[in-house]
Amino acid sequence: SQTIHQWPATLVQPVGSPLSLECTVEGTSNPNLYWYRQAAGRGLQLLFYSVGIGQISSEVPQNLSASRPQDRQFILSSKKLLLSDSGFYLCAWSVLTYNEQFFGPGTRLTVL
Amino acid sequence: KQEVTQIPAALSVPEGENLVLNCSFTDSAIYNLQWFRQDPGKGLTSLLLIQSSQREQTSGRLNASLDKSSGRSTLYIAASQPGDSATYLCAVLEGAQKLVFGQGTRLTINP
Image (tube, helix red, strand yellow):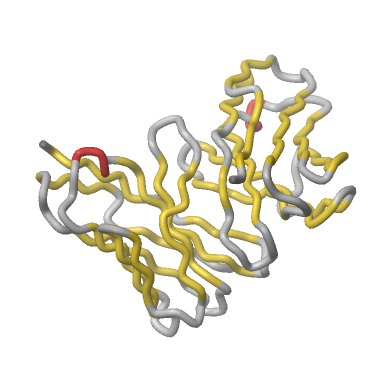
């Protein structure tokens, strides 16, 4: 069966520090991968998606970037965090485009 | 721009009742609709997926319907239990990759 992992589970970082969040999927090949952010009062918003290694599409211009160095690994990064980057970051995967998306356990990021 | 609205924002009912959660969306050009459950501080659990060509899907005590032309979906929960307490989110898939979410309905089932 398929499993999705995210780490760390919780992170507290100062403004201006770098960020790296990691997501890995087990039990499937060539998944579509997604990063969403859930911010207080703003709901869930798609940030990036990837349909293959090295292929990244950005949905919202922002302070963040994403990379996919391996088939089942998706990384969310920032060079300098802003207060507004605080939120709950969720990684998701799907087998194919148009298909059901499955979410990971999330990373709670607090920027102080 | 697609907008998804969920009503009510919060709902509290006694155990054993049947209940309906509502979801509406502004643009009927969707590929599918998913209902999720989110427990406090946790990720999303997919409950049901309805493709745009389908009218409803059932899983156990859950039944979801879709009326694409009117931009509405409902999630029916039969014989509610305290373990059903959670936030329920609906999301529509547009542009092949992008899920657009509602704000959710926070459900409390009282023993």
